[in-house]
Length: 307
Image (cartoon, rainbow, N blue to C red):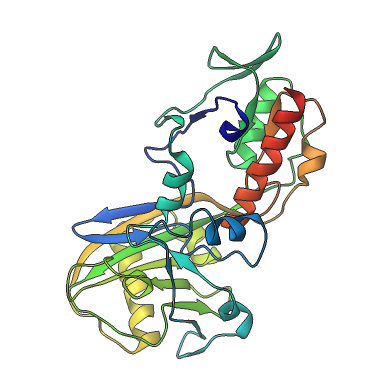
């Protein structure tokens, strides 16, 4: 929008931009607790990464993804490892930071009320010409219904996900950078060894890893004590990798209540032509990083057409 002469304002409820591209740094360890890597198969984001953003500190993840069956690890399927995966030494939030350069961004600005007003939309009383809603579709639906603006979002539902960050004193060097479960019911759904993705993710001699826990476990243990979740994760991790990992020095849990959509609505059905409110985000395109970018492009086109 800015490239086309408009002046967008970003209202972000969190304390950092990026949504589920989220990076946390603790005591010298850096973790990607949302999107583990950026791996568009094709499309506009891949073109951008290889073009305008290609010289901005982005690294290619060289080690492959392996799989596990709860007992052992083995080479992953070709489809997962044929994609080129990108990451950033300072965390994947750097991608969002690049897009944010020069924009008016207000963090910790959670919108409570949306209203249609003459020739525009008001957010908590502040008027704008147009609004792009990139919140989870369930939140967009709630705000829109309160504004008397019904959209076909009722079938979009999200699953929760527990994410465990761990920092160890010991350095590991596996043949892979991540593990994916072959069984969707297994508690240890995905493990990313962030210190094997790229440099600078752990203090010298240490290991940074992020475990995204499975659907059933996340639902069952969503409100459990952090210590219990960490202990359960360590037991599974040690059994599967057959490695002890040594002293755990950093641990933290992130509880995503709306992790990824289990179903999607269609962007064109949700957004009637001429509307001053455009619904974007994972609920109307898809849950991957490239889908988020593509939904932003679609939303921007609708805004430009109605300006």
